[in-house]
Length: 363
Image (tube, rainbow, N blue to C red):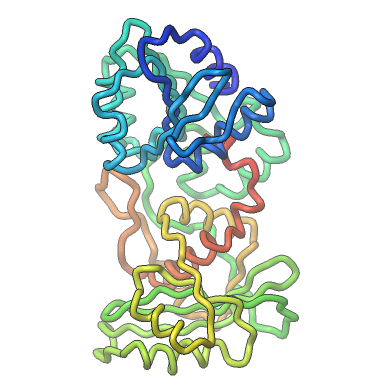
């Protein structure tokens, strides 16, 4: 679907019988995927999103809302919609979609939506396979949306993963087996002139605490060394002070660490780090499935390499699998602490997203 042609056509044809709405995973994804490209194509005819969640498109008022969370149901409850464009529908809360269907109640109401395929048991796939009045178009990566060189690179990056079936072949494929089957990114430790250093960490009390020291060399991020301790496995529960003095400080050594990237839920440990005033902290972006996808891409591009001394992290790569028999994609919550720390780094530092300016074109 060419959203840049469809959206203006629907908006200009609207008769004022209800609201005009753009729904995306978040307002940010609407900006990136829809509004920014439209501003380029139609200069001066598409405004910025205002404080009241509206945007002017071809002189008409259009609501721009996020649909990833159940609380957003309240934003559409009670309203009548004449036209809705839905972006990344498979990332929405099902409750939002069910409410949306009941709001499209004028004679001329229309809904257009786009998505990447997900699990074959996804609620949206169930809807598409129902007897509802639906017109569907399916595409594969070779259908001409992206430049040939990018298509070639994406095929290489997603080879062997569930994302190849979904994003390259357009299949509603089940996520099963290893999450990172492409992992062969182990290198031997050797002297390198690293130019930046970070530490990313997954904090646990009984669960393991994992820390990874990262160094940037020649455009590639190396997992230089790690710290790992499991209170459950060892029977020894450590305090925040012990994790700081026995883990974080020795891992950093005398290196100029730019920041410690840590899940914001680790409030007590973040407070301790700030109290010590030796390291800055950055709250990790903990979006699991987008983070897994970006990590897979970073690994395939070999923008992430792992020194062989990071034995726990390497071990987890061989054990980290998709959970069985779930309606949504979910990693099995085992053997994942080092990989969570790695995902925090990739997601927060944006080492994959910054390079992928064409992410939105996959939708």
